[in-house]
Amino acid sequence: MQSMTGFGRARVVGPFGNVEAQVSCVNKRGQEIFVCLPRELEGAEGNFHELLKTSFERGKIQLTARFERGKNAAQGTQRKFQELRKACLKLKVPFHPDARLVAEILKGGSEAPLSTVAIEKAARKAALSAIAECRKSQLREGGRLEKDFRGRVEKLAALRDKALLLSKNTVDLQRTRLLKNLAQSGIALDINDERLLKELSLFADRVDIAEELTRIQSHLEAARKLIRDKGAIGRQMEFLFQELLREWNTLGNKSPRVELIRLALEAKNEIERMREQAANIV
Image (cartoon, rainbow, N blue to C red; front, side, top):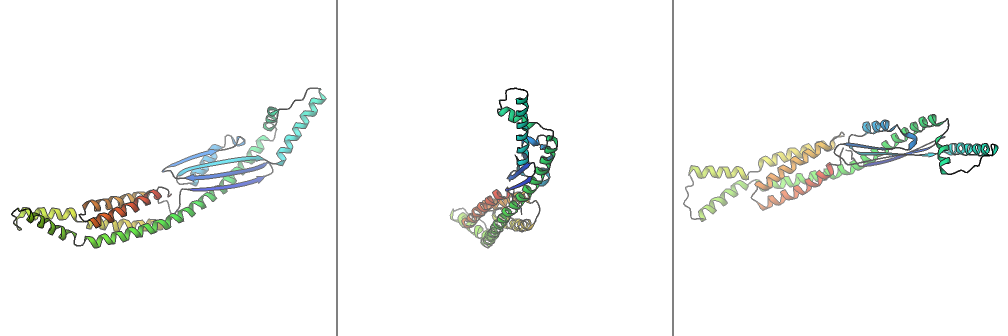
């Protein structure tokens, strides 16, 4: 089981400088990708967008890359600065350096195209390492969620078993209560009246929860199987928990017994928590 929540960071050091990549992923029903790159990698956003798209099933994914010039780059900039200063002195031109001049020197140079290729290569390497770290953290979080799911599924199974025991004599009990109430009302009844028997049969169907209990058992078995699955199961789990919630809700509405209604409320509370967590599963 793999969570959508994860984070990874990696750093690549080269002669041109250092590139650091951070990859984060949080819960989202579809896939949404954001890429933030330094100006040295302008135009390469599409490549990194595709890399993230193929690396994650879904979620809100963000890649942030930073670039720091290395010693060689700084020395080259200093050398150009000194050359410009000497040229100004030779030509007897006033030399007044400012931030704009430094920016122009940093931007210029015949080595720029080669540096861009090298920086992008390093950034891709850092991004791949950060993605790997992010996926590891997703698996760790997924392991914790899997343990929680297993515990809650077994709790639901125990509640289902209790409901089964309570339901065994529910129909007969309610039929007896209904006949007793009718008798106490002072209405003369013929126990063999066809209309009365039909109404009693319809009432028995309304309070019988055997079908709901059977479907709940089936859904719980499907949940156990899904939890063991190693693939993308998030959407399937959301649908399964929705069906479980519907069955328990029907059970609670049909049952005339307070004990069964309480069990249904407890089960629905557990399922709601599972649904919230399932939204964070890949």
